[in-house]
Amino acid sequence: MALPPEPAPIADSALALLLAEPFRITRPARQTLPFIFASPHSGRLYPHGLIAASALSPLMLRRSEDAFVDELFSSVTALGAPMISARFPRAYCDVNRAQSELDAGMFAGPLNMVVDAPSPRVQAGLGVIPRIVRDGAEIYRRKLAPAEAEFRLAHFWRPYHAALDLLVEETLARFGVAVLVDCHSMPSALSVPDIVLGDRYGASAAPMVTQWTEAAFSGFSMARNAPYAGGYTTVRHGRPDRRCHALQAEVNRALYLEEDTIQRKPAFETVRARLGQALAQLVRLDASALDTRATLSQAAE
Image (cartoon, rainbow, N blue to C red):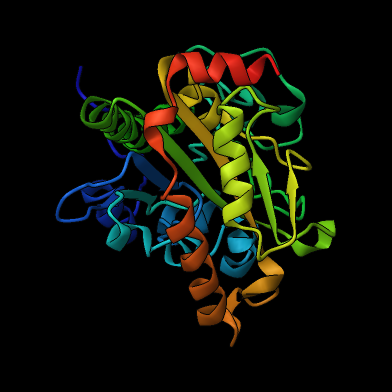
């Protein structure tokens, strides 16, 4: 089936760049680790059509970004693991949501696709096509054309997840196990620690994976599953019974980001180096111990 045509009525050079390369995968010369890293919310290439349709300034639109998280975790490639990073912004399409998590009320007509019953998250404006930015401000001046939903899902959501699925499958085939780390940042206004690890309360990763990860990041203050337990990506890929483990890692923006201006703090490189040391420890996890029997026995403890 042919992809839907571009709905933007104006020439949109940023959109053209995104259509040509909606995400970027950085790979080591040879993958030597059963790890995959993903940065779904650090995209900062904003289609002009989005800016024109928005009631918000470009800076306000960026409030939903996990700004520069792809850079914070970039050392993983040199360690031997691939990383996939979305280039499109979260305010345009949130790939940490199911494609059916749509707010039908955002659109000027019926949607010709499966739409879930409204969840609290979607009702709050945080569906796969967000209605609001982080501070609760409404993104759009008016309702969107229904074709816009299919366009964004077809050109951004589905290709991103197809590529991530393939990275996981390749890793499983090569190593017999896969550990996916979904990388995010969180607002400091929530009074959160330095790092929050989410394993969906033990459902998306074996206990030893979460415990090892917490030990690797012991140089930071940490919490588990509160306030973030994991989103769609950990649901999709966190299957310990199938030797696929998924964690969501949230970094407090106060460590590295001027949140009002979305600029790197002077401490940015120091924080990146500290994270690099933690990641180097993380990938020393003995993957051979991550078999189904070990997972089940630990879960029963």
